Image (cartoon, rainbow, N blue to C red; front, side, top):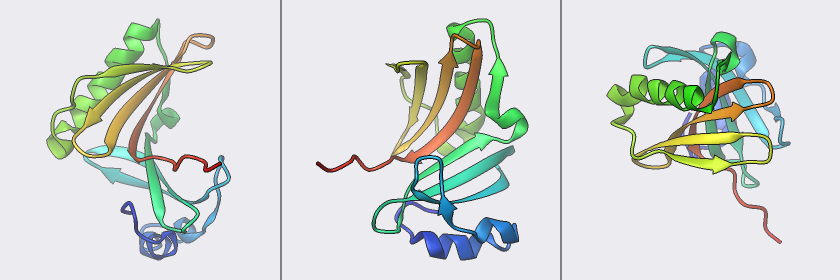
Length: 146
């Protein structure tokens, strides 16, 4: 899967790993999506590729497959450290992560560990449930036009 590639082409290519992966359907945010579980860079990852209005892949999300990437942790700092450790495990393939930042969301704090290019690890802290989840993000959703 690559950013900019037609989703239908990527769906055909993923069928060699899992026949069900070739099925295109609406994802949780209503964009067309394909999903497959693969082992990459020593990690078992659930990978989702989402297409924009042009039917080309605009965003790829990879979530650790074990426990759907979510763990219970003590606090936000532990979540930040969890994300930093995940980013460090990916460094041999992606290079060292750049300086991290925090994005405050209505129900979470996101610790963002960017790599060169349009790639980042995000660890999201949900204080209400003391949970932290991880994702490796390539590209991003196109902004909605007015």
